[in-house]
Image 1 (cartoon, rainbow, N blue to C red):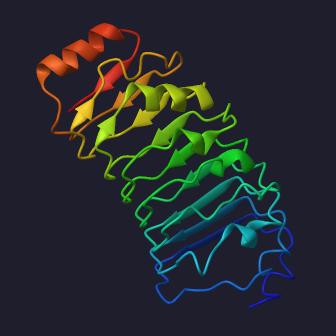
Image 2: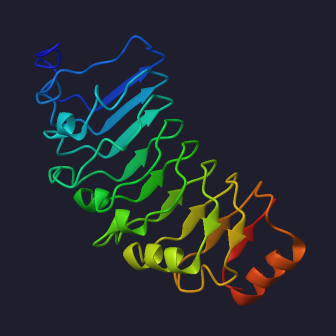
Length: 219
């Protein structure tokens, strides 16, 4: 209910775990705790109709947004959330995300870690980081529904996130990979492609030969 945090203006962390009855937040409920740094909800039935980026509008010091094992079908941020400049980590593992909107993360310029594992995303959209995500270091899209890893897509991804050093695509049903897909990612150091049935020794060797500076993990 509104006013629940009125007497807690210095609250730093909210952690809710296992509350499947949690399904709605009133607009403005978090407006009294601008000092909040970590917002985390695990194992809930939250949907996008219950939780959207506008709820976070006054959380100007928020550093972590974690909504794990819920019912979200899209990422609860939008490009108008200009107040969220402090967010460094977003974890939306185990939801029902199907796509990533373009320019979505332009409102969180401090983002360093983005984890979207175990969703239903079927393609990478490099424009999600446009116009620039200079601080992004780690991206996980493991165990989604991505079927292709194209050089054009990865090149654009690294263009918009030029300082990314780690990407995890493990567990996707990948059927096509360009051997030079990561060629233009000058700062990328590790690529995880574990439990991807497409790869064989020949394909793996070719990728490693072309990019000796990177570490690939296939097993």
